[in-house]
Amino acid sequence: MTARVYLDWNATTPPLPEALDAMRDVAGRAWGNPSSIHADGRAASAVVEDARAAVARLTGGDARDVLLTSGGTEANNLAVRSAFEGGAGRTPRWLVTSRLEHPSVTRVAEALEAEGRARVRWLGVTAAGVIDLADLAVALQATPGVVALVTVQAVNHETGIVQPVAELIAQAQAAGARVHVDAIQAWGKLPTTALAGADSLSLAAHKLRGPKGIGALIARPGLGLVPLLLGGAQERGLRPGTVDAALAVGLAVAARRALDGSVRYARIAALRDRLESALLALPGAPQVAGAPALRAPHVSTLVWPGWVGAELVAALDLEGVSVASGAACSAGTVDPSPVIAAVLGEAVAASSVRVSLGELTTEEEIARAIAAFTRVLRRSP
Image (cartoon, rainbow, N blue to C red; front, side, top):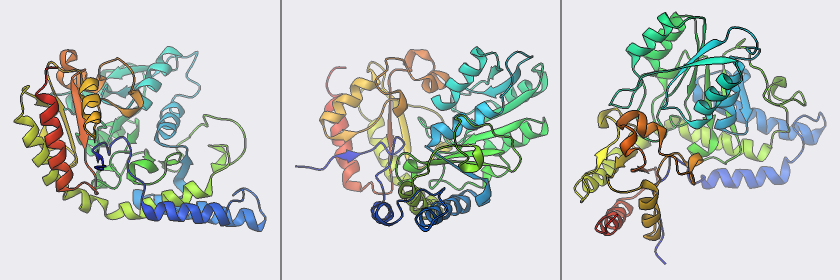
């Protein structure tokens, strides 16, 4: 049986064999509760603290500022909600963001507004797929009340467009606003020097070949985080619940390997371009979502007029090729992608298909993917 072609690395990544080996080892020898002070607890705690240090090294922070979470969604929720704790019942402060963000940000923004804790200013988006910095300047200067938080993705999860994070941080902080950067799609794929200066950053282990179920929020000292959950005093009282040492060691292995990941991913651009070039030559007049020059090296999102993206994904799945339409967390819904709608308009928002390559993608797999797309697209949509 021919192996499948996996081109959905933005959704999740195949775990590193060495991470799986380390997790099996720790699950057998350091299974104690890291909060316990006896020897079994101390063994587990050492593993957890090593993971915290590995994340700090990858993100350029201090281990004391790394808060372990269940993943990127929790990290984003914690960062965004904390900026508006106690806002109900008084003049709401402003949250500035855009429809390009992941649902773990946009849906929190909508909820905060519905709860009366925040007012949301949705930034304009350019045809290139980036936030409109001129509109950000207007929002910061003209929005009545206090802008409590500006939040932005470093790399868009659907289009792969790299956002102007450094410029946003400078503008927002000059206006006295806190900045949260959802950097989940950036770690291990791109140089991250532009993220320096953000007040908080999020990370998910499974996006960089670690395990699912663990991530981190990296926050500057004194930021004033407020826990989403109540319970024990783990993670400085900000994230109650027993930390799994086995997941932590998987995170540590992945974080260390991600240190030079941008070098490996830079080489993937040639494969991505070869695939994209072949797809653009196929029937159906596809269109690239966003400015090609602004993308991360491994992502291509094409809009296929006349096709429903989810149906094209299903057809390719039957051909043995895994791709995506919209965010993985929104799979199974009938709603068009708000990201593609923001960039290219509502009319084509349901017609996008994303291919995202990874460090294991081969030339032979690209050839097979092109052949599969060719077979499918010759059929009537």
